[in-house]
Image (cartoon, rainbow, N blue to C red; front, side):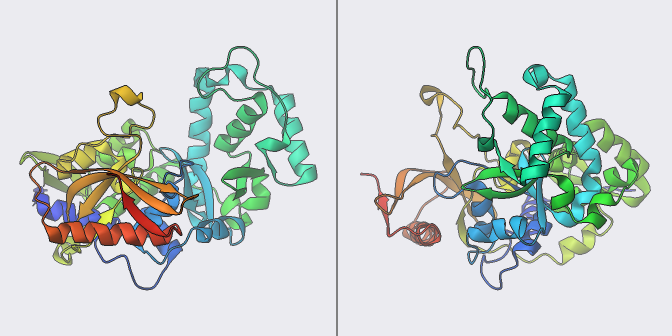
Length: 388
């Protein structure tokens, strides 16, 4: 089949539209619809302004407010927590397609050195029996201590056991309080119909690969693998080979003018024909936004080089601790370091960098000021202040 050529501007627009960033972030709010469109939303504990999961959803509809997500988890049981490339919330109806990932994460952990301090099976059973008898418990309900020298990411034995069982699907998150995870037995959290359904592995792989392409529009094999990070590279390549008659080969133009090969679903030409120009709205995106997360795809499509530097020593940071990309239309036009001072009720702008070659006339500064003001209201602060 002759590859379909997708120029860079079209590729950017298709990717942004597929990710819910093609239209104005206004109108009727459908939080579950946004999560299903993305497939997952990454969770993160860092709250420089708003935690990543809340910011990601707010970027797509600014009527979103923070309590809405936990309600879907704790009350409606409409989403569950597990691991994509990182801890994420996932639509509950996707649970049957996630059984392989529970086994996959267990196998990965069993091969790793992470388990050297894992409590034995009897100790893990004791933890589960406490949860069975007492109900949902957080790590604070246990009191085992770290022994030996403390290292970065060191955790007490009970926390290692809880996380291990969570990765394996032997425990599930039922709710969070102040971002602290509460663990429960999966049969108490997962609806029975979803929990009991078993699909062959090849059907789960097929669903994950097709689901990734549906949410990306197009992708090289590595893009497909990294989308959920729930299948391996060889799984993706084998799936592409087996599904070749039902996929459209494509060539995608990169920001530097080069072309790479990839695949898309059969409806790709119809999707491109139906594309509307992306909104010119200026957005401050979260560093963990799915459009930002895959740095290879980000750099290739937008020519935007970005890295998260919160774990980089201060002296080695290029930009700053928590720097937000600025998207306008289908271009990244700058980056900004902002921080919420909740005690003083101020959203502080610490630093701002225009992208090389991007002019910032007064009109663009006005759009940035409007977005900062919207973000201020989102997190309940009284004013925006720029550092002198």
